[in-house]
Length: 277
Image (cartoon, rainbow, N blue to C red; front, side, top):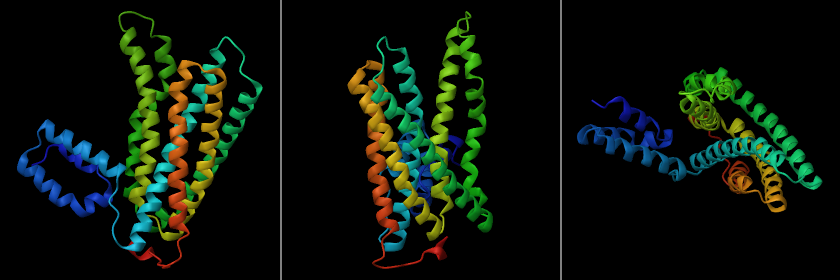
């Protein structure tokens, strides 16, 4: 029998990987035993499988996987840019010198762009929800349950940080006040991406999601430019920790959105893959 840790590690692999290699991998774990080192190897393998997905040879299914990966990655980069904006604004407000007007305007434009991209993502989520209500594939939304235990840590974080100076619990209270919201934000970024992968949307909805990702990618890029300008013109050390990941997220968003749009607009062999959902 496979214990719970190994079973969760196996579930961490992408659905496409589990479809092709899940049975063999589970049998291998049963033969070798679910030692801690095996579970660690499984988790590392799952991370590699998400970062470097194996695309099938079939043209239609390959385009589907590309669009799904593009939509999921674009969502994660949007979350990263959205989280970076208030952090950069806070850092700049704490600096002893005033922030240039141009930087402030760029940050304002980035904020409005991110809100607009959020509306686009909301429309895509509603389209995916409407299709799920039609197909009845509600189990694909199960990863969102992970938001339930992490949401309270986000809500009570200000209260925890208020009492963080009280001894002798100050260290643990402060750690929970910081790590709890971080866990919630990571969950918000990851679980919707997993849902998109598991829902296997129809061609029409998937193309809508992939093409709308281009607008989201430009919003993320605007945020990266604004944060980069804040770094160049103010050069606070703390801002570098926020700006460089945001620039990386902008690059990833542009690349993955471009690939997803190319797959969505591909018409050389027009294959409708509604039948395999």
